[in-house]
Image 1 (cartoon, rainbow, N blue to C red):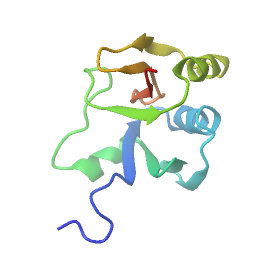
Image 2: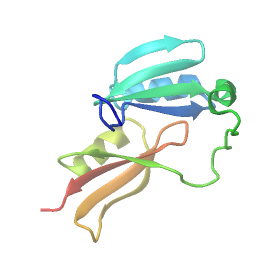
Image 3: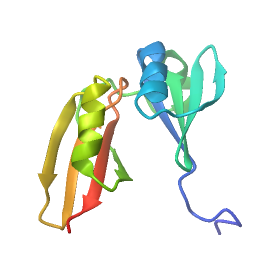
Image 4: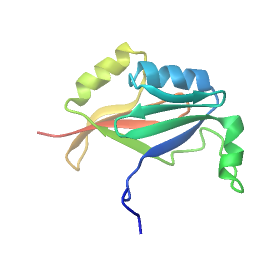
Length: 131
């Protein structure tokens, strides 16, 4: 059913009210390479996933007949990146001007986590197994 690529996430598209700020965020915070760019989008490689930053003005065409939700109406997705040391990553995020949404904290399911937002409001989490 899924073909030779399998059922794996390859591209995440997020809608951005401020495309320039989102591009700076991915270049500076994730140090991600930009692999494609045009007037209304930029695509960055974050690990094995391509993050497509799309200007919100271009989003209705992509999701029609659905509508584009306004930012800040609540969480719909959180993306998690496994790391070796959550606290060290949080310190580096702080040096890069990124405010934490929550954490670092130990979770009852055996992980230490912290989360932060990109300029489009997408919630990112870093997580490590508790020793």
